[in-house]
Amino acid sequence: MDGFEVLEKIKSTPKTANISVIMISALDDIQNVIKGIEMGADDFLPKPFNPILLNARLKAAVRKRRLVNIETNYYKDFDKDTDFAKLELFSGTLDNEMSNNLDTTFVVVYIRFSLFNFISQTLGPDLAREYIQHQGVRVAKTCKDPEITIGRLADDVIAISGTAKNLAYLVENIETLDKLYSPLNQTITLEKETFKGNLGIGISMTKGREKKPKSLIANAAFASQTALDNDIGIAFYDPELHQSNLNKFHLEPKLKEAIRNRELCLYYQPIVNTITSEIETFEALIRWIQPDGSFITPFKFIPLAEETGLIFDIDSFVIDETCNQISKWITKYGPDKEFSVGVNISAKHWVNPSLIKEVDSALRKYNIPSKYLKLEMTESAMVDDANAVKKIVSILKSMGIKIALDDFGTGYSSLGYLIEFPVDILKVDKVFVDDLHTENKRQKLMSHILSIANSLGMKSIVEGVEHVQQVEILKQFSCDQIQGYYFYKPMPPVEIEKIFN
Image (tube, rainbow, N blue to C red; front, side, top):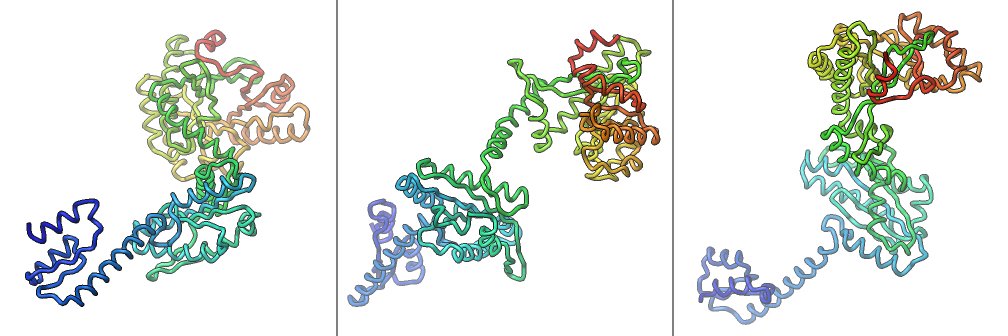
């Protein structure tokens, strides 16, 4: 075989692949030199060769190979851009220290620079690399203690680990932590572009005896994300918040499946005439009954649905199912039976024109008059995008849908909203009802609220009524309707039909 074949064999065999190779050949044209170098030769000498020159080239090739090996081994453990420890070395060092110091408290400070990915995607990876190098220098200046380990755990993450004693100046309180946050939050100018902020610092601590370095790092990462999400810069790990997020993480796929399998259902709470106590209307309330018969409270899954966008699917289901139930009751009791059903609509849904189509579609699907349906909104819906909500409310009212303002008094409580928005019904929240029968101030406030509703031509519903004394007071204040456990709890349709006649 010729020299090129020999070179190929050497470089393709694991045991010999790292041997330095100098090719000596009479073929000294540039194409052959390039070919040899590209195939892995360290150098190329033409025949006849000078032994002294060959010896020098040989030594240089070996030295170069050693340096390459040293560099290769070094960057297995250390990041090329910052020279900080990579995740495996960072975690391993922390693991070793924790194992040898069981009663010592260890700390991980996790810094996520969310600007890194933005810079990389918009201005290119080279500029993002320069940005993280600048921030790395700032971190190194703050953490000069040789007992402290600094690591680059991800493209946009630099972390610090050490004992609580060594990091006391960083983690004793928020004021001392500012020694780290303030320098990192200062502007950086790269190619005439200025960058500032968008970083989250998370801190977690535990005893060495826990021997869980990866959990310590993960907890600090969670706290860092909390700091970013809440725009607070710095956050200490909160196990309760973490557990809550884990619960949501596990609950979300179950909720998706429940919506898909129609495990959600509606209960209806009767609302009565204040004077006669006769049922006049209902509120549809979502319930999640699992296959084993257990309930998952709306206080758990509705906030999750709001966060994940599943609330749109839930709202659509409630609108459709409510109209279905209304249709059944019209068939059962006849068209002369007077009643209506209120449906709570998410604040996010009130700014979406699809709400109009969904309501219109459900009314047509079940062939029911619009007078039977009420839609309820909270004050927060008005704040998100007042103009968009106004347009949607106006269109719904033109269709004959009644609009109720739910939980009045618990949100922004601006009386201006009552004037600006064409609301038909004012629902007074339970907070104004609690202790109504024992506190004179609450009675005066309730009287004024109901007077405002009456003067603006709105029907009033007071929620959360649980005592006969509260009922008597509301009668005196000319409240129109009452909703609460004193009269009825939310019930499935079959139970409603036992009392609704």
